[in-house]
Amino acid sequence: MPQTSHDREIFAITGLPPEVLAVALAKYSRSLESVKTTINELTEEKSAEFHEKWVLGYGDASVADMAVVAMALENVSILASKVVEDNRLASYQEKSTRYVPFDPTRYYKPAVFMESPMRQTYLDAIELQMRSYEEVVEKMTAFYGAKYPRPAETTEKMYANKLRARALDIGRYLLPTATLTNFGMIMSARALRNAIAKMIAHPCAEVQAIGIEIQRAATGASYNPQSQKLEPIFERLMNHSDPEVRALTEELVKGVKLQVKGAPTLIKFTEPKEYLAKKKITAAHFVERYFGEAGDGKFEDEPRVDFYGEHLTPEDELVTTLLYPESGLSFRKIAERVRAMTAEQKREIIDAVQKERGPHDNCSREFEVGNYFIFDTLMDYGAFRDLQRHRLTTQINQELNTRHGYEIPRDLAEAGLLPLYEEVMEKNRVAFRTLAEVNLPEARYVLAMAWRKRTIFKMNLRELHHFVELRSKSGGHFSYRALVYEMYEQVKARHPLLMEHLRAVKMNFDEDFYQR
Image (cartoon, rainbow, N blue to C red; front, side, top):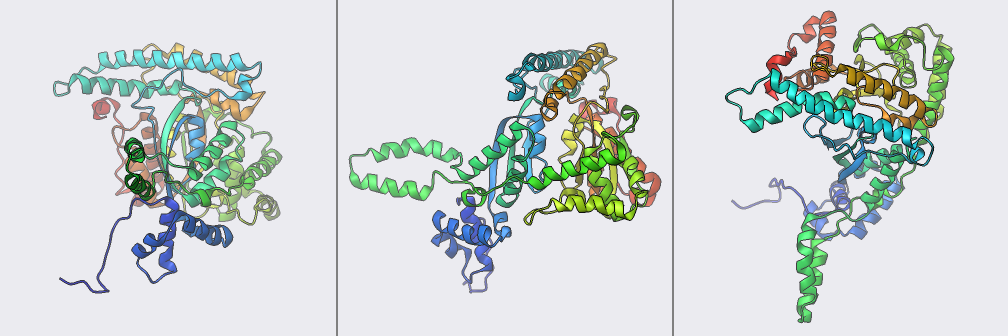
């Protein structure tokens, strides 16, 4: 059948550097030609000129959404990984604490402690946790092997993997956030610039360095596995006695583009996002004014989930959310105080925060208010590490600390390991407080993943269904399964009709043991 100029054509595109691809697709809004014509005429130099003019010059940032960069981040701390992954417009895959044992010799060593009298305090604390992690995994594997015998239909290898996975679920509570991990990240150049700007303004030296290294990786030559295979062949051809063969090889090397770069033009101009750092200082000032230092109260006795279902005006929700990250208090306690404030007091807080926003700064995530289900959660850091992946939700975090106590994982007491666990955790508390006197942000590296932290999750009904249905399924970690089922129960008590078709799964650990 002959084609006409109106025939539909749909095709995938590959083999282009991200910036060239971004320009090619951007040309749809500026050209009558097919993208194939545009691609054939484009070079990396022409693409750079386009980005300099439209993205950097005129601020047409939507073009940068078309330049997608894939990155691998290896040997970064778990603590830093959570900062990097606190960017909504990206995809991540990280090494699992549930399926892969972590090397006890591999952890981040902050210079602020390694080059001070606190060196041994830090090393001793980390090494105690790592030794205990290995011991708990080994003994919990034996415990589960005795308690849950191998089903006849399960192979020895599958059974051994299940036992180890369940034991790792317990052992991970003792892993320090300094533990080194690996993860992959795919992100547009536009989102990457924003992420880098936040990282290089972060108080931790490691996070700042990662931001700079991401910027360098995105502006330099990418790792190309095909290049690794072809380079020896090209090298042989370039040394060929026939000059025509050498000339053809040079042309071939240019065409193959062995040194494809990420997004050199779009990423190279990235300044620290000072607005976020200043916002934290401003909010902390108002927390101290209205609540005292970090607030008052018995933090360790509070519930793991609190569904805030009361009416809250958008103004009150905004002020409450702005103050929450710099406090140790619950969303409910802050909201009670905010609702009693005068209109002028609320205005003062909002004005002070917005005063710090520069001409190119978007409002911070705290401004995502109105028409949400609000859950104030208090969970171990390991569970947070899993639930943070729900980036469609609005997440407002308080920093990891010891004020909320630590979780004691199931089966630990029955296995006879509770005294060991509690001893390690209490020593961890002391080590953290000692190190925090020198540098609070970097002292958090020593904290075990058992310590609890507060996070608000705001979401609409559709996301609540996805959140609960996925995370309550058998095979999930018992910590977050219990937490999300409690979310479901609390909303159901207030809005039964909305929960009728939500497929929540109540946990039965014994029945689910072999479901992993």
